[in-house]
Length: 341
Ligand SMILES: Cc1ncc(COP(=O)(O)O)c(C=O)c1O
Image (cartoon, protein in one colour):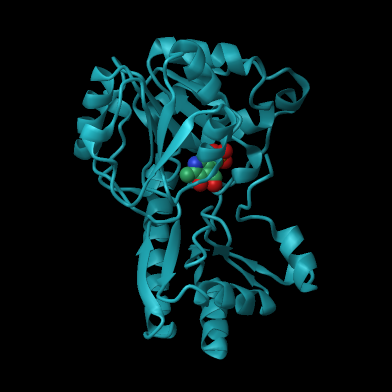
């Protein structure tokens, strides 16, 4: 299967538009514009094989509020692995429900494992439609739509899926900035529920490839066994342990992301053409603008690229997703949007 298009493919876009990479404002991902500061990393983190790091596991257990977890090479590693693991555990399972607009690596992974794909729109599929052994994947909040389900809503699905001997996967890649949290982590002990958490987005360090999976102990044992040793390199483990323990930094990061998001939504509302803007949806890690005619999003994407601003043209081709800007970046974006009308 072909590689999917994602944000963050700046080198390719820069080449396509003939503008040097250093000239671009890259807003194509949902990665925070402020990163956790990286201090001195002990040489031993580079020299030794990365064993399971007690300090990191305990920092993660505190941060996520749950002890049964595994540290992975991004949540992507688990997304790829889950379909085959589930197939081994539940050979009668054939159907998976996935969001129509959402991070497409999920769909591709289940497709590759020969599952039948059923896509749902903004709302979860009706409970009565779910069948025995089915899999339900929820991205909460969803990327790029920003749709957020409450924990109460998901609990109802969890219960029903348990009665069907199915599997619930909740991808909480962007949950760190949701307050009050709607995370399902505290309700996963007795069920086939898998929670995926991304480290790179909220902490602004996607390049070090750290993620976590949380589930009951049987699932964690099976996943750890399949992933094999040395999932996450030593320096990345060291940085993640520090970042996850730094509560003051978490509070400040949430505050500035929320302020920047509000300012950016206001700027977009006042700058974008009211006749073409259908609506704006957002979390504090990305903003998605939905346009009311299908050709408008690709046109705006193209115009922004011509001015060295790279955003994500969503797969539906009717919307564009913007990463959150710092104040300086917001000024540049506002000027370009005003210029191109
Ligand atoms: C919803 C969602 N889940 C998972 C991922 C994978 O992230 P990572 O492997 O960096 O944890 C992404 C990346 O963009 C995403 O948007």
